[in-house]
Image (cartoon, rainbow, N blue to C red; front, side, top):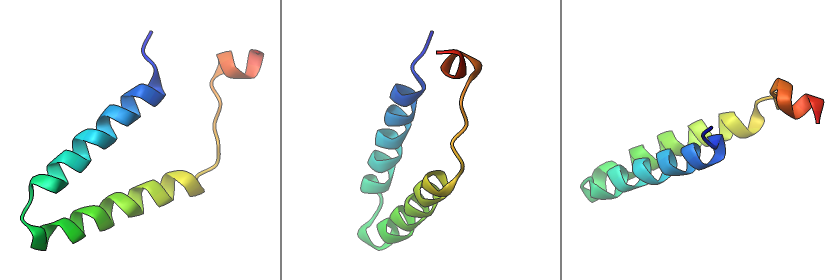
Length: 55
């Protein structure tokens, strides 16, 4: 079984690396998009899986 938190961390690190490889002028837009996505995730309601609810 995979760890969703670990998968998100790997995805985040990969996205930051892609942004960092862009020319300086393009990085702001990349970070702004990442910021917007993370803000939406933080504002979203918390959902639990069946195994989390049972415990």
